[in-house]
Image 1 (cartoon, chains in turn orange, red):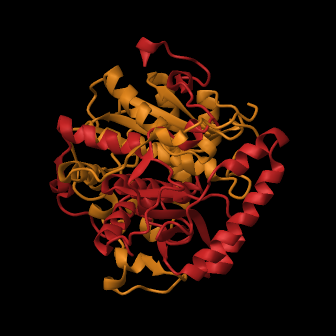
Image 2 (cartoon, rainbow over the protein chains, first blue to last red; image 1 turned 120 degrees about the vertical axis):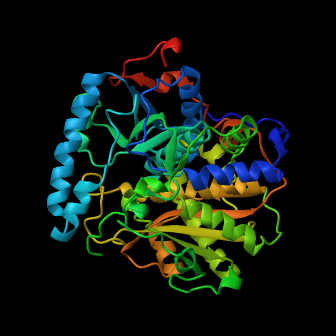
Length: 238
Length: 238
């Protein structure tokens, strides 16, 4: 695309950015705070096309470096394909378990870590790293910015799903090459997320890995620094 | 942490995941659809501590692989430090411009790409890749999952900010080593996002790079495949 003079008055495209109403803010925070990684609570109900499109449209409205929009959405419903992905998960989980300290392995085996077969829909979200050419705006200094943009799309999808009463589980225990082989994804496309998606009636009030004592919520205050790495702020100074 | 028997009834921690009300859903979608990358609309007003803490708490409630919570939040208000970051941006932008096709350079120069000095608060969000030890759950097959988790935290921060009437701009045109030197970030910590944050009265109705004709919104339908890479779905088949 050759250089085009900017619109005469691009400022005409500005609209109010006022804060949401109290109720609207509460709804946004409710989505953020009650979103869970769902593994075992999926109901078999098919999702409506309209709902799936709303989630994908939410993902498509994520920020992207240089407005690159590098994502694709691969919807997997075929049971044979999901069976193959599930088998790939089993292999990857066995490999991961063997790498854990021995005292954590029994607990690892007791965790339910995916809903590939139970959820009626799986969604693989990918990143086309060359979508806008090799020198996209904002990627010469931070080449992985396109992958981070795609992760933002995953989070939009997830929050919209929570608002719709739809659960999402992100399965990261999969070998990339297995997914490529099963889904026909070419080598130049990065695989960012493999999601299990379906309606859920109930979800954990706190993260399941916290409930099951795998890890604890870190105190937020300890994660905040001021002006220099490691310089703690007093509570009243944030 | 040694293996602990699971709670007797972890299912007791399950709560309803019913869909939000229509108004609540609309609020979540409003945040997703009206969130913008802000560069030039920042007001100088200081943000309240309470508002900043709500945004950071939203970020802290992002999903993270193995409940790793790998993020830190470095709040930068010092003007000398922000001046140094701004100078680093100028150098990085000049280097990026030189890599663009000649016909895009004039337009690139005409774009406002950061609000480092104009926004009252800058936030650097980082990822401590070793936070839960070298073999965290879910990272043996997808080692970059912790970086993607941190990007999800950025998106939570951004959506909460939109609901609060606070603008956010993600500056990816910065050399990582410059940020390390200026902010004292050690080499083992990954820098994921450098954000400009401040109140804004107005924002673009569409992405600024779309308004200014740098790139176009891609049609969502063309980004969706079914079961196999490249296999398009009919509109009625999503």
